[in-house]
Amino acid sequence: MPLFTRSNQTPDRAGAATDEGLPSADAEDATPEEPAAPPSDATAGKPEPEPEGAGAVAQAAPRTRRARLRARHPVAARVLSWAVTLLAGALVVVALLLPNKPADFRPSEFARIPVEALLGAAVLIALPRRPRLFAAVLGGLSLGVLTLLNLLDIGFNEFLGRGFNVVLDWSLLGDAQSYLKDSAGEAGALGATVAVVVLVLAVPAVMAWAVVRLGNLMARHTAITTRATLVLSTVWMTCASLSLQVGGVPIASEHTAAVVRDRAARVKATIRDERGFAREAKADTFGNTPGSELVPDLRGKDIMFTFIESYGRSAVEDPIMSPGVDATLDAKTKELAKAGFHAKSGWLTSATYGGSSWLGHSTFLSGLWIDNQNRYRTVTAGDHLTLTSAFKKTGDWRTVGIMPGVQKGWPEAKFYGLDHLYDAHHLGYQGPKFSWSTMPDQYTLAAFQRLEHGRKHDKPLMSEIILTSSHQPWAPIPKTIPEDQVGDGSVYDAVEKAGKKPADVFYNSTKVKQEYGKSIQYSVTSLIDYVVKYGNKNTVLVFLGDHQPMARVSGDKASRDVPVAIVAHDPKVLDKITDWGYSDGLRPAHDAPVWKMSSFRDRFLTAYGSTPRPSKG
Image 1 (tube, rainbow, N blue to C red):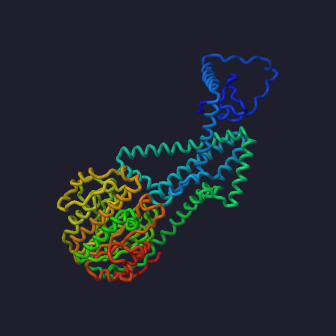
Image 2: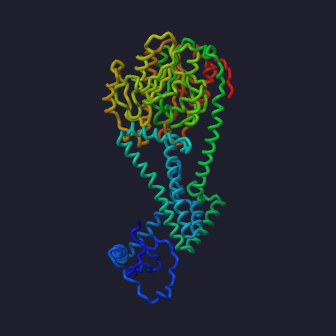
Image 3: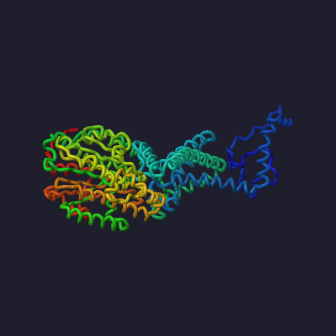
C-alpha cells in the first residue's frame, strides 16, 4: 500500500499539498470519485455525529498520523508519489520494448515509442472507473506474462540459439533444473528455483499495479493525458511513415505486437508440424530394405559412431579456440597415420544449437530433421530405420550403446536397435562428476574396452558412444592420465578438486572460450589415443559434434555446423566416399562440403552398398 493515501481529515495549511499547481501526493494514489450529494433537508444544518467507541478511534488514528506526516513533509510526499508513478511508467515501457534476444540489448532499443502504450492509454482514458480498473489489471497481468515469456526467450536464445516454444519447451525447464543441480549443487539449484518462483509471481503482480496506477493518474488528468496521447500518436505515425530510426532501430515501435504475432504463428506452425511430421517419419528410403542388403561393404568391420559433446565449427575456426584445437587435430592425424589409419572430414549442419544433444543424435542417425521435442518423441516411438538399427537389422553385428550421460531409464535404446545399453550406472565409475559430465571421456573409453571391445565376440561390434567431457560449463576439465592408473575412476578425485570452478570460467567470455577449447582437445585426444592403441585393420570410426556450443562461446551469429570425420585402417573404406569431396585428415577445410545432418544417413548407407527399398508414409 502506498505511504501517502487520501485522508478524510482536513489537512493542515502546511499540508495542503497543492502549492504551485502540483497535485497533492495523496491524489496520486486515489481514484476519481463521484462528487458527494448535497445534504438533504432532513440533515441540513445538523452536526455530524462524532465517532464513538474504540473502533472509530482506531480507524481515525492511522489516517490522522498519515495526514500529519504529509503535513510535516509535503514536498517529500509529492516527490515520492511522482517517483513511484515514474517507476510504474518506466516498468511498462521497458516491458513493452524488452528485446527477446541477448544480441539486441542496446540503449537505442529503449529510446522508442511503443504503439501498444498509446493504444492502452487511449483505452484507459475512455473507460469509466470500474471497467478501467478491470482493463488495467487484465492488461498488466498480460504484460507480466509476456515479460516472463520474453525472459524465457532471452535464456533460450542465449543457450539454445532459438526462442522459447510455448507448446513444446516446458519439459526443458526440468532439464535446466537438473543441469543446475549437477553444476551448482543442491543449494544453488534450490536457490535458483526459489528465485524463479518469486519472479513468476512478482512480475505479473508488479505489472498489474503499474498499469492500474497509471490508469488512475490518466483518469484524474484526462485533458492533459488525452492531449499527450494524441501528440505522441502523431509523432509515432510520422516516425513510422518516414522510417525514422535511432541507433539502427525504428523509433516507432510495435515490438510487443510483433512478438505476440510471432509467438502465435509458432504455435500454429508447431501444431501443423506435429501432424505432418508423423507422416514424414513413416516414409523411409530404406524402410523395406532387407538386412542382407544393408551396408554389405562394411561386413566384418568394427564400427564406432561417436558423438563429441558441443564440438562445433567454432572450435576449429574461432581465433581464440582454434590454435589449440587445430594443433590437436593435426597432431592426432599424424599419430593415426603412423598406426596405419587415415581420415577424411567435412561439415554437417546440426538440427540443434547450444544444447538438446539428443536432437542432434537422432537427426544424424535417423536421416530426419529432428529439431524439437515433439519430433523426437514421434520418431523414437516408431520404427524408422536408423544407422545403428540398420546394423542390428543385418543380424551380422552386436550393437551396443555407451551412454555416460544417461542417468535414468532410456526406452529409446530399442528404437536405436541396441542389443545392450551401458548408462552412467553400468560403467563401473566410482569417481567424481565433472560438473554435468558424469565421468571423464578417457574413463568412458576404458570402460568400453573392458566391457565390450576387449572381449571376444562371435560377431563384429557396432557401438554408439557419447563423450561428455566437453559439456558446458567447461570447468573443471579432466586431464589425461596414464591408462594403468584409470582403474575405477576414484583417481579423478584429485583431478576434479584441482580443476577450475564453473563460476571462475563461465562468466568470462575469454576464459570460457579457452576452457571450451581445452575440453574439445581432451575429448579428441582421448578418442584418437584409444583408436591408435586398440584399433585394428577392421576398425571404422565415425565421429562428429552434436551441436555448436552456446552463443557465449560460438558467437551470436555462429553457424550450426559441426565437424564430422571418418577414420579407417582399410583404405577401401575411405575409397567409397571419394566423391564426397571431404578434406584429408581430422581437420575439415573451411570450404569442405557442408550437408544437413539429416542427409548423412542415406549418403552413408548408399556409399557402403545398401539397396534403397522405400516404405511409404
